[in-house]
Amino acid sequence: MQDDFKNAFAARLKQQKQDDRKAERGKLKGLSAPTKGDVQGLPVRLGGTTRDGSLGDFRSAFDTITSLNIKEWQDEEYGIVGVLLLSVVTLVLGFQYAFADAPDLGTNFAGGMEMTRGAEREQMTDKQIMLERCLGDAYSGGEQRMCKMKYGGSLF
Image (tube, rainbow, N blue to C red):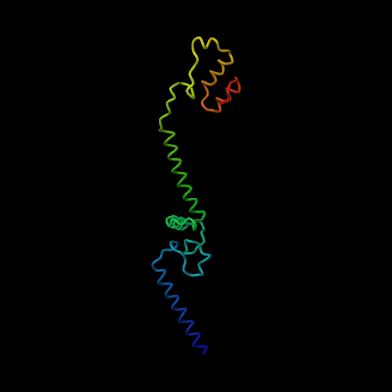
């Protein structure tokens, strides 16, 4: 009776090993999920599930990204998508900064300000003249607010 159990167990184990060999012939390591329970701690490059920083991680991450199932994503997938997104945004903004035409404000001063001339200029106080000169040299809204705080005038 014991010999029958041993023979049955040995035959079953032999059949499982043959089935596992047939299944692994068509697969590359790291491309698909492991089929045996004893590979749970192995790295992806050896056919396991644990990511260890090898090139198999990138292959596995790319396969996970292309499956479009965000629930299965890990840190590597988010990192790859983040780097790609950052690269595209940097390229677009860099192109806009380098090659886009400047907006036409119609004047030499920021914000479309016109320099006061003639009789109006003679009626201005020294503080108003200094404010106008400062605003003429200001390039940003922060610099314009600083001029208005220093020489008076409405901040907005």
